[in-house]
Length: 119
Image 1 (cartoon, rainbow, N blue to C red):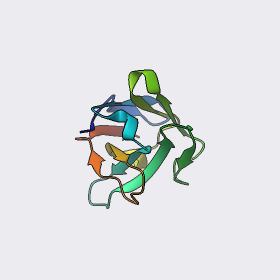
Image 2: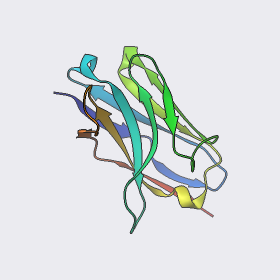
Image 3: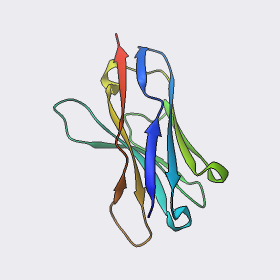
Image 4: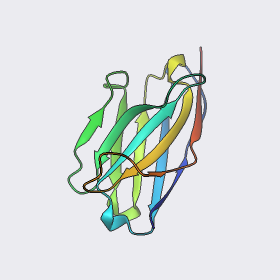
């Protein structure tokens, strides 16, 4: 059974950078897509970025396009989210999630990692 664990969150000033990591374990060959979502206080969880496990196609929300880069290292079963030019509105708990083939939704979620951007 696939499990994911996020790391790399923290406190950073506006304009700074952070890199989040998501390590997957247990049956990773069955993964179709891995995504990053975020939830700010008082707001709904929203999609940030995703990458297909095999082909490496990437997808971004408009709010992060040009600032965030998602990548993967299949040998390490790890997905990264490089976040540059961070803004206070990027403050949120960031979650890694897994989508399997023939599923429209993400069904495996990590515990989340806090990212706080100070102005």
